[in-house]
Image (cartoon, rainbow, N blue to C red; front, top):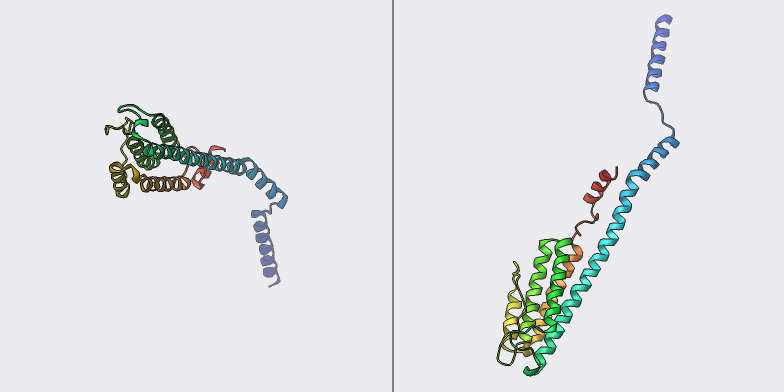
Length: 219
């Protein structure tokens, strides 16, 4: 009995020893050091990159929103002034006024930036605004014989706005009806800018998916 008990005790001691050898305890300082290396060389650069990109993307959105508001506001102000001016002070038929040239250039610049950073959906929203601003300028500079100043409108939006179309027809018939149309165009422009603020900026790391991509790219 004593021998058996002793044997059992030896076996138990031996098993416990094997278990202890199978699960070595890693010192806490080493664990902390390894985590520090991983965070410092892998996670931290990815976090830094995304932080910087979010700041840049925010600045780009703010700049583009301000540009859209500025060029749209200036064009509509020119249309309002031209609508109120005597016919003799407007452009002759077929002539493009300075306001029309400035608007055409601004339209191209905004369109290019939207395409580069936000894609087709943003461009289509802008096209709707652009079409009505262009048409409003065109009617505003109509000459005394009823001609319309040539201001290009070569893009057609996939979106439609029955309310804008109705207001534009009223303005076309009577240039004194510009204010309701102007307000509707600015409201559409405001909807566009709100959409832009919620959109992802192409080429910038701003989402968790971008962050994961950065982690593997920076390994």
